[in-house]
Length: 370
Image (cartoon, rainbow, N blue to C red; front, side, top):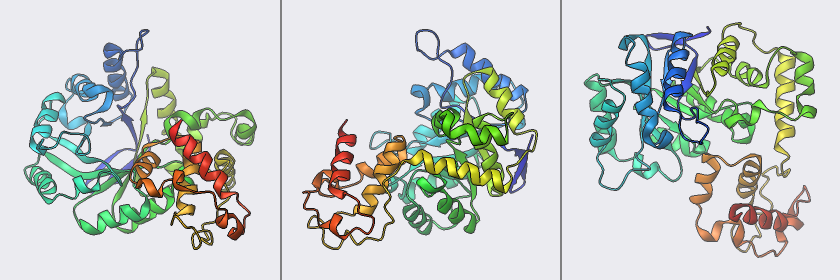
């Protein structure tokens, strides 16, 4: 399997994300199959397992503990996350952390993350006492490597890093060939790389969206690589990025494990032509409002709306709602939401692309409320 190095470690690049595990016929979590599936992944060579406090109603960490505790502790790497954005006020990091160790049946975590650093949670994660607690656990050897997962926009990610220099070793971001430009994952990847922070990848196939392309969009890819699944294309795009250390995928069938491990074992990276073809697919998937962010529309807006920013959120939301866009919408004051647009049309008159901005704002407001 393709391997990566991180500090003094060398490990398989492909990791098992335990956010989505099998359900039974009644639509409930299939505990027995989930444990078996995690162990199947281990037996096939996966060595990195990622869970979190809220996953599967709190059961993901328990499944990780039951499935993995039968193996030597130093033979696998376990990652979980502190849910500071989701716990009740007054709940201490120590209370959560001790429960996580117990649930996962372990004395330490190889990788520990602040969960979902975003526009709506940064205030929680900026607390020095929280950071100090986890840095002390790292000093004690109960955390081997400390990082965070992030759905923030690039500028807010950069500001968070500026406020906490030297604290974090790695960052987990949503990164795939669609979000390379749609959510500026490229900019986030480059920022983290410049800062010497390792990149962990979540949502490499965007929750399954990139696994099932329409025939018209996938035809060129099938012509170039008839033997590859669409998932394999998404993974191979990421394999070429040298600062990507772990690529996580959620799996709920045994054949998913087999297929994905095969993709990480044959070393068939994309050529330049194939990469261009994949990015063309991404552009067609967007079906976006063609805003160039020139900001001519903003000068005369009587409501003071950041119209290019709102259009970028609208384009993302149309592709499929995710944590990043939802957090950014929630962080906006009511008078800066698309529903605040009064439809005066000054923006459209100033737009070099002739975008009917009031119609876009109306459609965006309806999409938020649908």
